[in-house]
Amino acid sequence: MTAETRTDALTRPAATAPARAPHKPRRGRFGVHLFLTAVSLAFLAPLLLAVYASLRPYEETAQHGYFSWPKRLSLDYYREAYTESGMGKYFINTLLIAVPGVIITLFLAAFVAFAVSRLRIRGGIVLLMFFTAGNLLPQQVIVTPLYVLFNRIPLPWWMSDSLKMYDSYWAVIIVNIAFQLGFCVFVLANFMRTLPQEILESAIVDGAGVWTQFWRITLPLCRPALAALGTLEFTWIYNDFLWALIFISNPDKLPITSSLNNLRGQFFTDYNLLAAGSVLVALPTILVFLLLQRHFIAGLTLGSTKG
Amino acid sequence: MALTFPRRAGRRRLRRFTRRDVVVLGVLLGIPILLDIVIIWGPTLASIGLSFTAWDGIGDIHWVGGDNYKNLVDNYPAFWPAVRHNVLWLLFLGLIATPFGLFLAVLIDRGVRFSRFYQSTLYMPVVLSLAVVGFIAQLVLGTDQGAINTILANRDDPIDWLGDSSINLWMIMIAASWRHVGYVMILYLAGLKSVDPELKEAAAIDGANARQTFFRVVFPTLRPVNVIVGVITVIEALRAFDIVYAVNKGRNGLELLSVLITDNIIGEASRIGFGSAIAVVLLTVSLGFIVTFLVQELRGARDR
Image (cartoon, rainbow over the protein chains, first blue to last red):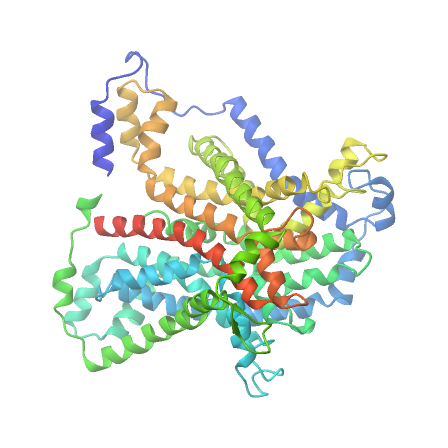
């Protein structure tokens, strides 16, 4: 494709005077900076506003609005959101779902990707499509039958205190795994295609089986891709709202993102408290993003560019 | 590009697997395939089946043929507004948010100073959950104390940004774009970095100006990214749910197909057959785009 475009560009008659010197990227163009700064500030503003609102008492903002000078700033709302509404507990719930979810997804997806892209098994492409398409379906399409299904699967008491798959972490974990598999398979298969085939060939000559080729030889080479995907998947499962909302009925078991709704009162909502809750919920993902930014962006872009 | 990836498939396939290999393959491919069938494809088919029945989730299932669909179109006042909102959402993301993300990527890719800062800032909202975005939207757009109304100082006659059903959808779409723009930008930035600089030089020697170089030379080579961005845009528009649910549970001007499905299933009167019929409508639209995407990918894979 690259070659095609190039010849195309070369054969096309020059549209403007050829005397013009080629553009080099110039630095310090004032207008561009002004524009990008303005857009960046506009993008940051809502976040900053949320932090600001969460530090101010309700009476004050109710009277003067959020866009006003502060009289009193305090962390009271954070204390309230964290202790009284038990966000610590919800955070643990999220970890109980996200950690096994991410690990199992990555493991299974890595093997499927390995089989499809490295072993070149028959029907590999079909398998790849099967998983990728599954990831693209709207969640609501599968919600109803799953709801019914999970209500009918009994689990022993030591696995679920509801004695059913419904209202247990198992339901949320397994749905997250199945749903995220598609994206991970897609990305990892693209990544593994860029690895040199020779390494695998020499291992085969040495008599390595499929498991050894996968676990000892291919996976260690995929570390950057796995780190990237792990970061991304953790954030996505952390941010998930729908699955827990539908498959969990006991409010004590909700993960943190879904529990945010609890901070909303029945008749009256203290938006400053909600702001503190939102900031607390967003904080881990923003920290993960700032610390692992490189991985994060790599995870998203691995899938779109071919190595 | 096609030339640099010689085909090796034929040679590979001749190798025989040992019995242990077959077991490993069977188990480790079997589990994810089974999982995908049980959790995703099975329920998809079941949804289609249930959409032709009347069922409250407890009693007997009655076959009602196409009645659900007929009711949906004729007697369900929320249906057409929801379809219209989903279409608007798609158009808004596709015609405004996505091109804006591409525009930002092009600006940053030209090598301005502080590009790292701009990149991180613009990308930051992407890591937030849509639920959080919905709550933050309430702070910015609230009627009595929201930041925008405070700036406008219209205390006596405040604009109800999120409650007025003629404008609230637009506000929510802007909030959703806040997240979408950064995502699109990062994908295009990666794509632009991998464009061969020789291409741009060749175009410049031919006398193409910056705009021509971009639209006629660079943009066509971004095809793989374009396909992915297109799919993400469509899927985001069809899946939109969290953000309206966080704002007002998807009522009063914010109805979406996904909300209607959820309401019919976990609402007071659980009308599973009816909810499934809405789900099938959503599925049909999504499948159209998914198949297009897969065909593109298949073509790409054949090139490799």
